Length: 281
Image 1 (cartoon, rainbow, N blue to C red):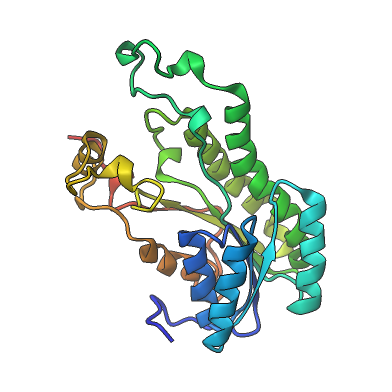
Image 2 (cartoon, rainbow, N blue to C red):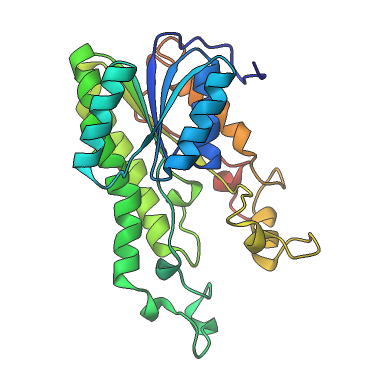
């Protein structure tokens, strides 16, 4: 058993984690399993979650991998039936699926810097923007509609959404992703209010900048030095570093624990090395 950030016990709890084929949500699934939970790891990438589940089971934990499209209600209902048969009704839902798309991203930070042939604000693809909104917002709403029914029946449970530090102040170049994550923060508060009388708590974490295989080339040059955009990020980060994916686990396990966080609902917790708190001065 690896070193967990908190001494928590999720024995007997059924935890659904969407987006578990990725680095961050895969680590969350692992942390819940190591804390005693029965974990259902969901992702469109079936190979990734099946491999994660096999690895965790080999280590003595309980985890099943399921292929799931978070934008397809019928597919989610099918997965729900499988999880009910394999593990039982859902106690905790982590809505981890999400992401950006190049079609919804500008090449330049500012319009006055736009170059001929580049992708400016006026060249953003409507379908790409729509995809980003669907993936992040509907990709949170639909799994909640499917799996939160179990929690209503039990009159207890927890939902954890994944927002972003750019939900507070939008980042340049990624208007659709910033707006979609702002929507997740708002939706988290809405859900917390809507479900309060049923015993369900709903919170979110707002990760800051993490280095991953997908964005490493955007943050670092080939020689390992920070890119210009990366240097600007670090200059605006009081702790002068990026967030490590494992640093999200403590907040995740805390917010989903009914003993430690029993009165906490509707909270969006930044985990960003101080980025959202810094005015730049």
